[in-house]
Amino acid sequence: MIHVEPDDPARADVHQLLSEHLADMFATSPAESVHALDHSALSEPSITFWTARDGGTLLGCGALKLIDSPDGSAKHGEIKSMRTTAGARGRGVATLMLKHIVDEARSRNYERIFLETGSEDYFAPARRLYVRNGFTECPPFADYTLDPNSAFMELRL
Image (tube, rainbow, N blue to C red; front, side, top):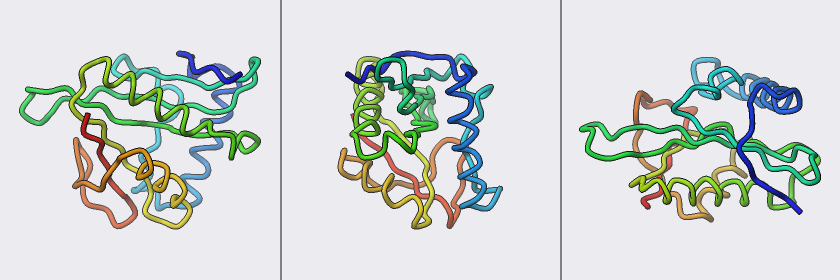
């Protein structure tokens, strides 16, 4: 059975998965368009980090970063570092992680969840996952700027 629980991004197997994630991001996008975080950045207090495991075996990870609305009147979240291990793809791990993150954002009374992902074909499966779960395209948010290599999405909660 797959369990999603808070975890340490510096844990050895997680660190390896995040390193693979960053390597893939730099291999598919120009450096200035890579917004993925490394394990140390994912340890910041404004970020909650989870892993999905089956019997202790790492299957995937995801994070939720707190961001305030521009006027400070509302709390929003940003999904960061969604990644599934190669061996776990096709098992519903990404959907399970995404639903966990959305449920957590709702429990925190966030008004919206945002995300940035790539616009290249490599990222098409991720964009389809988000659309299937109610996300729609939106303008850049927080400190992001327009970038032809980025797709910005939001889910209103």
